[in-house]
Amino acid sequence: MSVLVGRKAPKFKATAVINGGEIAENFSLEQYIGKKHVVFYFYPADFTFVCPTEIIAFQEKIEEFEKRNVAVVGCSTDSQFSHWKWLQTEQNDGGIKGVKYPLVADPSMVIADNFGVLAGENDFNEEGEAEFNGTPQAYRGLFLIDKNGIVRHQVVNDMPLGRSINETIRMVDALQFFEKNGEVCPADWKTGEKALEASFEGIAKYLSNK
Image 1 (cartoon, rainbow, N blue to C red):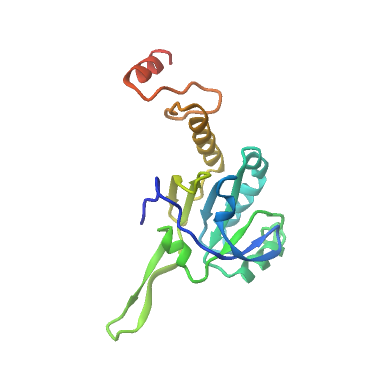
Image 2 (cartoon, rainbow, N blue to C red):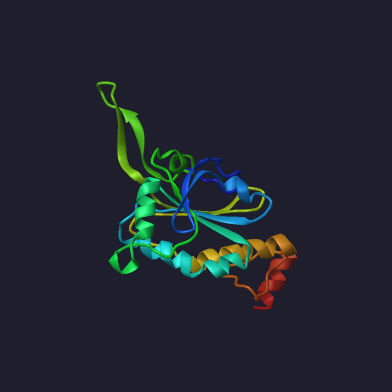
């Protein structure tokens, strides 16, 4: 498992399904460099149970991300054809129809591996034959990437544990506040609350005013 915070997000070009049904070749996060922050997240598999709750929840909050100039991009180790089929399936039938942001296909598992969220690894058995040990799916990894392509926040959940989209928005707000004002954000900080200067005097002032 890799900690990518403070480092350039791994580059990739892959097929993605965009706008709820268009297949785009050579999709890359590089298109957002200098323009947008990116929330890039992984989920284990299409046509499962926890995954659609997260994917749809991101779509339901997409306006909150857009007004913050943030692109949301999902990814799993499924193919683009599986993504496409799931996106055409009604939500009351277990599908995710209505989701418009990009879903990246990573059937080779290279992207998940490079981001350190693959739940297994390729190896060789005693006969020298290639085999995969573990689960050929991604953990629920999420990466907040700034406009320079640097990972500023990451969280990785095990497969049964769904994430909080509101917490992701809070982290976006904290990062953008810091970038704009230079003040750091204390525990449970929310937009509109006081931040603090990164100094002993700053923390003393903050604590005395709580």
